[in-house]
Picture 1 (cartoon, rainbow, N blue to C red):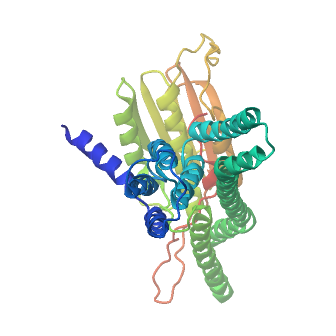
Picture 2: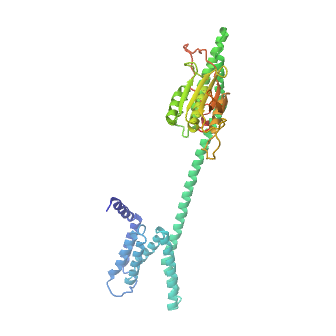
Length: 450
């Protein structure tokens, strides 16, 4: 015998263990039957010969069947039917009959649906046939009383079990429906809370964070002008305080927006990316490409220059989105990322990402649509980049252009306002001030496929 078969047999034996209520019913019926037998309170047996103690045999069998009334159906009922037939032949005890009616009740209540239907229909048929047979045989009205007694023994317990079973089934169905309703209500509540969190995050970003970003950018621009006299120094000091507080406010706003957008509020927002991480970004992109595509960074900015945090974040996201799209759509070749300070006009940062066109026409137009299904979210990348750039009042263009070598390439070109930070802002100890971390201008609008 395998271990699985042994386990199944042990479970089956445990399932046959009598319930404590069944044990109480069996012992009570057995005790009452013995008391009736002691006082000779039994009907005349159909079999007139034999000792009186034979009436105790059906009683003991019926009490044993009562032990399995809940877990041993339909075998307990078949055993009880045999014991009741023997009881009527050997001298019926009322306790044996009562235990039999309880077995009928338990078979309908605890048995399978099929067993319950069979027992109920058989009880009704036996009652009707027995009553009709007695009336035809004896043609006496008293036979109706025997039919009523037969109905009391067979129909009353079975119909009672059927009604209680239906009541329990309905109660269980209502309980399951209530649990399902509560679960759906909890889902609705969580969705409502999540939607409200997202709405609050959007409101905080759109109403507060954008204004703080504008304050930080404009104060940085004002600090770039030379100071003249004591009033100029005071003005620069006031602008430095404004800029410092706006940058700190952006950092706190970013943390709050991250907590609001987090489902459980336990995850801290990740560090804000900057242009210093472009080398690592292009290294990862080159490792992911693996098909002849290379990624090159040409940074023409002054060494060590630090741009305002919103500008660095927007520039990083534009490059990240453009590189991601080059991984998906560009032909094998070199993908170039160029950063040019004051290239378009003074006080701006130019970002140019050029990638080989994949299947472009001779005139450099975009590839024709082949009818293949596009991935969900396709076309949203350019929208996301444009929103980021326009949030800082910059410009963005994307499309096929002719490169310096006459080859048509796909180019994403963005111009972001980035005022120079020429002067150091006096701090409490005279050390120059550097901007701290800031919020993402549009963290929820990131896209991966344009």
